Length: 108
Image (tube, rainbow, N blue to C red):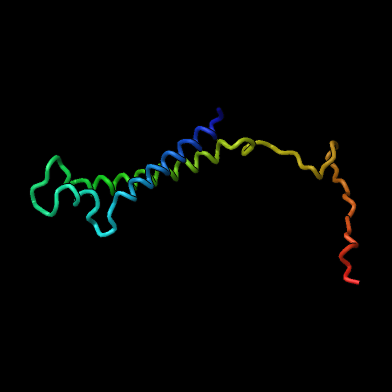
């Protein structure tokens, strides 16, 4: 298993977690925290801070996703290597490719 494959698996997992965290949030600010405690002032088990946790986890997962994508670019096979041009011969001179013409589309 190459480094790129490991990064690719991590990117998919982080993207899935980011989707789940975003889907749990309510766009009007209620979300998961309002469904547990209703609207009262007495909240059980620290559910009052769920909105803050979801907000911070969204930013963390988004930053982690961008970092993994950038790091995976470094590990792509052949990204930093020297590639030989197919237009060069073994001695370094360029080769002349004959121009191919397609006479079947002349429009006559």
